[in-house]
Amino acid sequence: MDHTGGHRVAVVVEDDDLIREVIEVMLQQAGFIVHPAVTGAQGVALVKAHQPIVTTVDVSLPDIDGFEVVRLVRTFSDTVVVMLTARVDEADTLMGLEAGADEYVTKPFRPRELRARIDALLRRIGRSAPAATEEPDEPAPGTVDGRLEVDTARRTVRLGGELVHLTRTEFDLLAALHGARGRLVAKGDLAGLLWPDQHRYGGEVTEADRRTVEVHVANVRRKLGDSPTSPRFIHTVRGMGYRFEDA
Image (cartoon, rainbow, N blue to C red):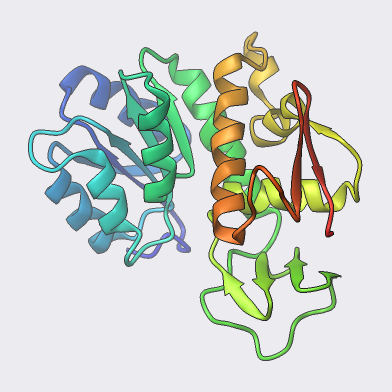
């Protein structure tokens, strides 16, 4: 089933029956047809079969772990991936985002908060065209910084003419920094860009949110070959945030 059709499709990969049911109900209330999986292999097969727009993946599964599920899914799908875990180790967060997840949520979570994060992801990708899967023949009119081109219409990034593959979240953060044109952008403001509805549910930007932003920015730097100690593009303003320059 194609997710561009009349119904939005989601896959939930979770071996805990209670948590899986909670996520299923939340997504169904949001208008999704939900396909549940209790193992990683089953989840990968469901994503391939149903082309969901959203997939939630638990890190701890009875067969392959959630990181491997996401890596496999990313070989054939651009589904929005939200990883769920009871572990709060920052290295796990980094592994999840490097595997290709768009979002990383720790348990326990409130269903409405999870829905807010999924809604925010879907709105961000819905406001403009999906990331291009083929290289355009000509760079579209957009913003060009020497060898770095950020095309917000096609949601593509080129460095020295070569396409740089960023996740949706990584692109949104780079576009925000790039668009600020040398002005400081606070980590809290970047977190607010990713999760604009959080305050509606009584939530504020947390240290965990700021650390997640740091991990995303580190991934963007790595993909741009940008050194954190002597950066060309993304400069850290200690204790505050980031500033984009093209030295």
